[in-house]
Image (cartoon, rainbow, N blue to C red; front, top):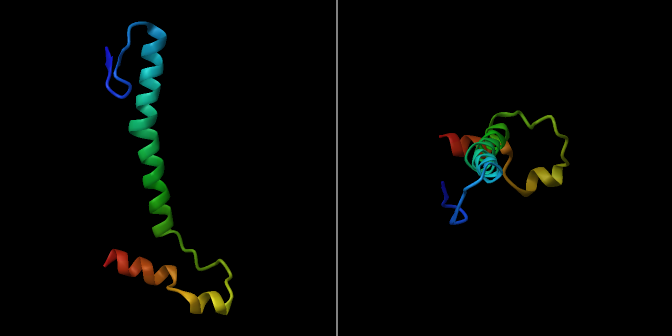
Length: 71
């Protein structure tokens, strides 16, 4: 078996197991965790976090940003 990521030939069982675990992490776990983090950021109601009036005046609220992204 050829590992295209590191450009080496995988020949024994331990190398194959390392290759499979590495591929599962890179191809499944990492992208899914990034996707879930983005979805949580967009869909969780963050208005419960208390912020000062200075911080409110400084920039756009998360609700405004969500509306702009989702429209």
